[in-house]
Image (cartoon, rainbow over all chains, first blue to last red; front, side):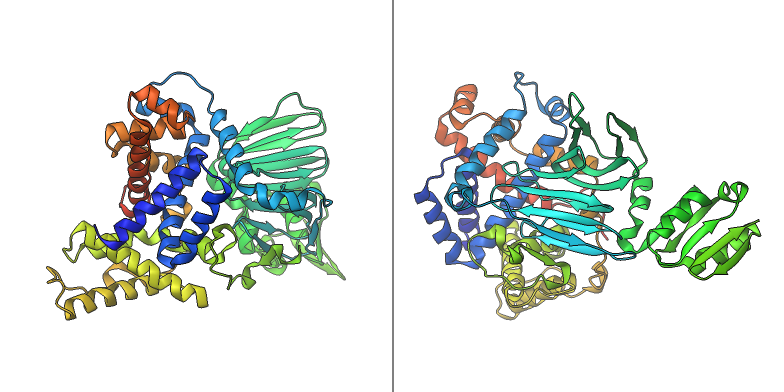
Length: 316
Length: 197
């Protein structure tokens, strides 16, 4: 047996013990010592753990499909896996938890201004990207991972942790991550949630039961309803163009395109008449490309563009 | 709380402590290095070495990359990984440890300069499911059964032992083998969902 093989066997044995819940304070300190002893140990463990975690995510995604693909087994709720994992997680963090129990929840506020963009990386590797004019509060401690979206739009790429689900709240709505990439955007009187990958639950104070989103699905949540529509993943990706500083329009009316552009610029575009507002355009523009946008409309549609101070007026 | 969060640009050093979840090298390794494993394994296998030697080399490459990352996270990582791999192989040849069937050079052939996100980083959930299913299907049947009972059914070790009519110790062995085989299948094997970049 080679050196690497021995290390890998040890690493998989730790994963098995941890997964089975055989984890006392003593085990933890033995494990810590093993991890500390050699970078090669840590690397082997990280690699196997990453693979093992991926299997959990898949089980969460489509348990029925996996099960039928492999072999029939007795019915048992897949939720048990979560409960069990949650219990394990609780055991693992119980030491650090006690110091947090008696402290008040604390949070940090992050905000972007008009045209701004910010990327936040949490210690667990989860990433939150804030679009322009966005404000969030972040609660991130041993007890919870929670964001309240006060206004604007954010994209979440969450490292799933069954013991500490990632929760986003906005108004009366709540989104619970089940291993996910998703975006949340506040719009007038409603909330738009688009799921790129994984799974997430959306519910609100008034709804009887949560709606589960699958990849490619968009939920529109109002004060008293949540509706879900399936969209091509391409369209969802386009809607996230802002993450690269792009706005992508596809058969978009000028009215909507202008409203979108105005989120990023101090200069505001105004459309003078209904007929112009209903023209539709395709194309991608930099979020600050207000001049490129107005020039394109001028050339393509033959409309008039007039500059009036901080306003740009488009008219027939 | 102030250090709970870092902007993208500030992520760099962290203590290489055992608490991997707070370790930036771990986060970086899982996110940036592991997805290169399929290409790396292909590169290493071309030298005609045995699977055990290839796996040893892979871990040695990881070790050196992470040693560097503990000082400073390298960016881009892909050229570094393949340069280290090539140098390790050349060293072995010099020391007469192995006679390569093919030459070790040829870094250009795998386009190491490009550090654009590979398809493996943008795998959609559906493709990942297929990848996982493929990985499970490659396992020995008893090992696969134990893994599914654990991972998907959520049974305890004792319950799995009863269900399969084997000892708890054997259950552990199955899970152990399964974890390692899954890692190889998920990261190390080229599949249709993971076209070369």
